[in-house]
Length: 361
Ligand SMILES: Nc1nc2c(ncn2[C@@H]2O[C@H](COP(=O)(O)OP(=O)(O)OP(=O)(O)O)[C@@H](O)[C@H]2O)c(=O)[nH]1
Image (tube, rainbow, N blue to C red; front, side, top):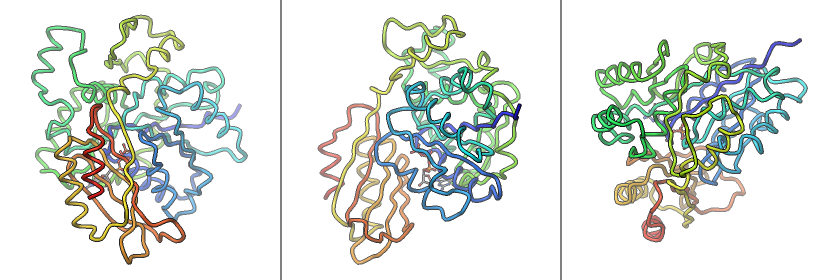
């Protein structure tokens, strides 16, 4: 019987650098046939477009599958399993499968899906790689008060008083086989090394913590870890609690169906996303400053999209994580309509009308 095809799960909070890391991987994975499954929160397909735009024959458009019917960990049976089966039915089969989860996904239900009868004999989870935004974490954007959270945890096993952000972050750390602290170019080296120590102590024993910028890691470091995470789920405890009364995360961890229902729509009502359209941009730098002001005023977590700039033939990509806004021309617009489309993601309760007006100004 043929060896199982390895699959790497790339997880990490919104904007941590998953797409950047995967693009780097695809550009350097010469000769390996890599199939990619991407799942994005917010409906714009930005990540898929960015990856398809990378002009390398190893990332042919055919090898990229976008799952857009909601969060991958909540639609495992409906979307993920059939997609995997279709990939496995291809001839030739991929050498390796890379799955980019949405920034709000819990990795555990996805890893658990590899134990389903149709998949377990044919694929294995090579490793769960958790990408961390080193800047955001050191600035405390996920656990506003780490010490207070720790004290609460010591006093009380029910973690319901944590923010959805910190819960997700903990789940993503708890499931990791490798933690990549990204964006070290924006960090003081001492802060980066302290964060590495802290995450090592929070992760399962033996988990590698690697520092990088722009997700630049050698392909051999990322792929071929051979962990088989699906047979080691017990150690990847789930801390995420959501707010329905009938669930009990601490009961039988062996019951796959039960757990997949438990995670249905986990905490997604705590986040929201919407799309803002506007006309052409006249001055990219001024627009970036405007976006940054809007983000600060409304506590937006992530904003990204594409636009056109008056008189310019290239597409402008706008990407913001917290208050940091990147903008760059990435590819010719060609016949695409001119104008701007942005997806805005934040915790529930965003003032959509005010944000829309401020971005359209
Ligand atoms: N300075 C700096 N910027 C980075 C680094 N890695 C990624 N970025 C930027 O951060 C932004 C988000 O990066 P992505 O790779 O799209 O992050 P992601 O985790 O895929 O984001 P979502 O899919 O929205 O969750 C982009 O503007 C990247 O260019 C890094 O190491 N340093």
